[in-house]
Figure (spheres, rainbow, N blue to C red):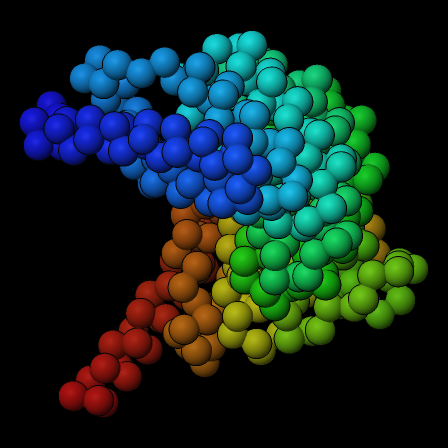
Amino acid sequence: MIEKPKIQQIRYLFFSFSRHLSHAEALKAHNSSRWWKLHEACLLAMGRCKQLLNDMIVTGYVKIDLEAFIRQVPLADLSQFDYPYLVCQAALFAGRFSRLLSIDVNRIFLDGICQLLEHAQHPIINLSSLRAFYYYCEEVGVDQTNDVINYLPRIFEGILATMSRIPQSAYIWPLESLAILISVDENFVSTIENRLSPLAIELFVNYVQDPLINGETTAIIKGLVHNSKVSHLIQERLIPLVQSIVDNNSVASTLPRIASSLAFSVLDLLTTVLRSLNPPINSNLLNQTFPVVIHLLLTSDDQQILINGGECLCAFLSCVSTDLFSWNDPKTNISSIEYILQVLAKFLDPKTPENCCTFIGKLIRGFIREINKTNQPSLLGDTLGQILKAVLAKLQSKNNEIEKLV
C-alpha cells in the first residue's frame, strides 16, 4: 500500500515536470540552448523515483500516458548529439521504464541506442547506451527479450567499439552488457564465440588483479560454458590458460603469463567453469587440467593455491565424477582415485597447517558419496578405514595444540 503523502508528493512532482517541460519548449522555440538542461533535470529526477513512479502507474494512483511522454521526450532527445549528457539521461530513462512500454515503443528505443552506439562520437553516450540496454534486459527479463534478438549483432559490435575507445577504469558497463547479452540468445552467441571467448580470456589474464573486471570476465566465461552450443569450444580454449600456471612451455600463446603467485585466480576460474557446465565435460579439459590441479595440491605450499585447488578438486568430484573416476594418468598410469587419496594424505597429515585444510571435510564427504554412487565401493578398497584413522589423528593433534595453549 502506497502512503497518501507519497501519492500527493508524486502528483506535485508531475505538475513540476509538466511546468519545466513547457518552459523548455518555450526556450527551444526562442533558440535558447538552456532548454536541454530542463529536460535532463526532469529525466534525472524521474529516474531517481523510478520504483515509486512504477508502482504509482501500475496501481493507477497516477494517471499518465507514459508511452506518449517517452516518445515525446527521452526518445526524441536521443538524437540531440550536441548535448551528450541529455542523450545519456534519455537513454537511461527509457531503459529503466521499458517494462511498462509496448513492443513498438521498445523497438524504437532499441533502434535508438543502436544508432547511438554506431554514430555517437562521445564515449559517455556509448557507455550510457550500453547501460540502457542492460536496464532493458533487466526490466523486461532475458526470457522475454525476443524483440532484442535482431539488435544483438549491432549491440555486440557497439560494445567492442566502445571498449576500444575507453580506459580500463570504464570497462565495467561494457562487460556487464556483454554478460547479459550472452544470456539472451544461445544461437547468436554461437556466431560470435570465436571473437568473444578469446576476448574474455585475454581480459581475464590482463586484469587478473582487478577484482571488478575479473568478476565480470568470469561471469562472461561462466555464461559461455553454460551455453550448450559453445560450451565445449570455450572449455577447449581454457586449457592453455590452466596449463600455463605450471608449465612455461605448455602451449604457445600471445597472452601474457599469469604470475605463479596469482595461479589461485585461475584455479578459482576453473572451479566456476566446472560448476557451470552441463555434463559431459570436454575430455581434453579433464585430461589436461585435472593433472595440473593435482600437481599444485601435492607440490605447492602457497596457502591460497591450496585452498582454491582444494575447492577445484571438490568441483571435479561433484560435477564430473563419472568421467573423473574412469580417468588414468597416461604418463604414470596412476588413477584419479589414487591421486585424490594422495591429496587427502597430505592434508590429513598433522604437520599440514590447519588454515590450508578448510576444504578437507567437504572433499572427504564428496569423495565417499561419489564413490558410493558408482555402486563400486570396492574402488576404495581398505583405504576408507585409513582415511577415517587419519581424520581422527588430525583431530587429536588439533586437541593437543589447544591443550598446550590452555
